[in-house]
Length: 135
Image 1 (tube, helix red, strand yellow):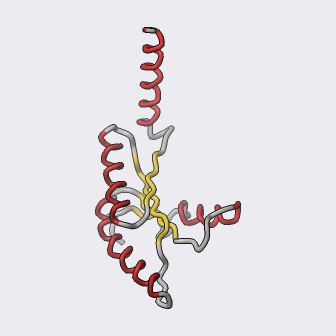
Image 2 (tube, rainbow, N blue to C red):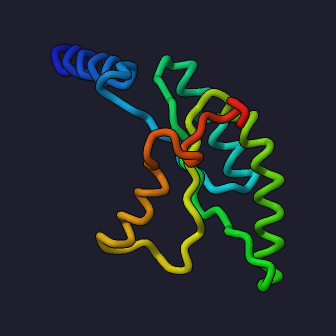
Image 3 (tube, rainbow, N blue to C red):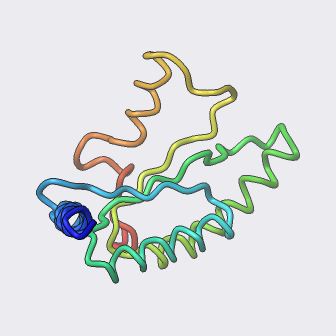
């Protein structure tokens, strides 16, 4: 029916306008620090920008903390550190927050608060810095 199509079109325009309104919507890209995931996230950010959908944050999840007592952990840490230099240039101008690799699945209020503290750090802290801003 023609009326249904027109109503669908109006709804799609409303959704598009909502996505493009930075005052109402925040699109946050999340990825893990391996090259394939970073590359996919870069393409997503580019596509969102081409659709005029604002993106200002990227969350990097499962970041391996340094651990020289574990050969696997040390190798993973070294690989991720190398990927961070690409990540810095790929997400230049975006606010990047990292979340450490937890030893178990994040479940429950306490664990979610610990993760949130890494994702949304207090203003002025090193976490949540703007990529490519130096320092």
